[in-house]
Image 1: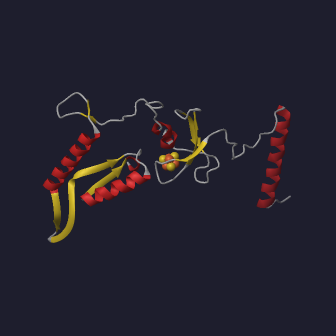
Image 2: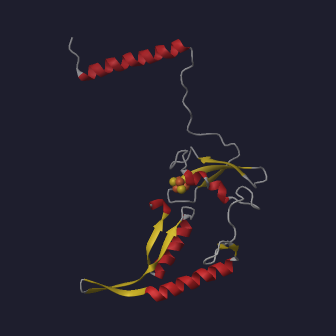
Image 3: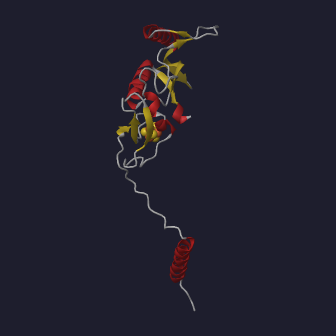
Length: 197
Ligand code: SF4
């Protein structure tokens, strides 16, 4: 008997289905159940991961007093991530710090190590921000390039090549937006982010 390709696939598919069914009956185990995509709320709070532009949905469960996050997981009902979270999203609970709870290692004050020193000193925010601003201004003034010359042609560039910015994955979308505006205005061209390296 000659079988077309389609008939062969139909016959072999039916045969395999029968074997699988017989196997399930033989083992005495109930057939596998489907797991529903939606879940019933158990007191979680719906939230959106703030780390990147993907905007994954998450469910956060806190203690009754709201001081400590007990669990963060992807929201299976969210159309973007359908229950998944990357490692940054899974670490979102570290943001939630009340009196140092949840993440006692999170830095809340600037630390400064002077040149040649082997110690970190705690500084206040005004001191740290002024120091950073002073150093950026000095370096930018000393290295500013209005124009560059390439093969005899002069191009206006208005930039400094002496300062680079390395952003972190823990910056949220709004912080990144404001930061890039500032960096471009300062004339920086070397702007990177850990997620791209
Ligand atoms: S950082 Fe990860 S979990 Fe958060 S929005 Fe982006 S991809 Fe989703």
